[in-house]
Image (cartoon, rainbow, N blue to C red):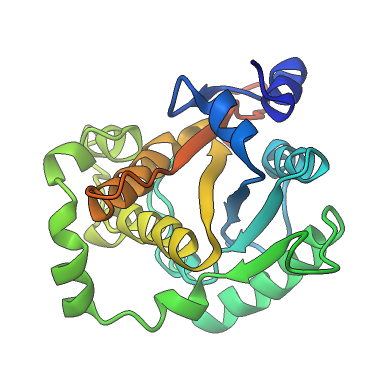
Length: 236
């Protein structure tokens, strides 16, 4: 039986890929908490954010709880996905300023009248508290570098000899995977959505949760949307 939310995404042409063939059944078992992250790399959303925003809004309309994640922490690192060169690093003050502006914009799309209906969080609240050695001991050993370098966001940059990828950007995948784990643990969030360029990051988060809860069978899944691009085909 097809789930009404996924059917909505299919009908609108919003569905690019899913991490499971039985996602219809998973979504139909119970209302899910579903998140999309938006890094405040500028002080405004752009047209490329439209499909993820509307996808999350449709999730709420179909009875699921949207979790809007403003990436005040990950914005300090910079997502290499879809980028041919490294982003300039933001200051914490600028990231905080952008995060406030984006929170105000995102609040127009969702019913945030109660935590049961929707959540809006900022990952700086937990990422800035992480201690490097503790993080590497607890989570770093669960990631395979062999797998990480196969992800499109990393592989493409590794093939560009002049630009390459810094360790800072390389670590972004770990930070986003940890976000999914944190939201799974603290907010019962079991689905992450994002643009097709986020496929590798979503898979890493799903795999982290699977490995931590290997003996219990708990699961998390992902959905990607097609990218909305200009005529050049490049990411906004």
